[in-house]
Length: 84
Image (tube, rainbow, N blue to C red; front, side, top):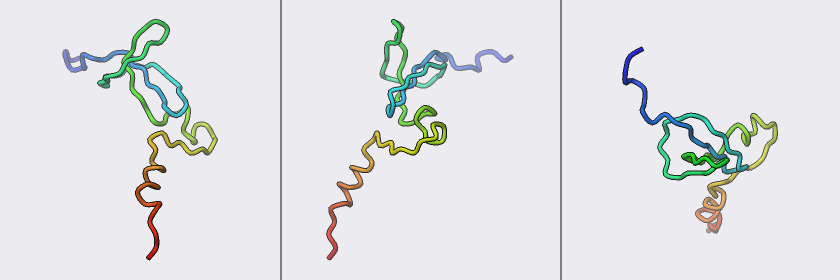
């Protein structure tokens, strides 16, 4: 194998699904500013809107996931318009 072709910051990172608070740990090179402590160990934290634990394709359930407030933002912007 070639030397020095792999990233140097390859480490364990915690990914958190914000719609159902599920957390899983895997190895990644993603840069983060937040951390989380799990079982006494501190990991860099990446927040995700949807993962396989909350996606309707994997769960078999249809539900509205609106973590970013997109519906409310749309209603504020366009919902109050009156017809002339």
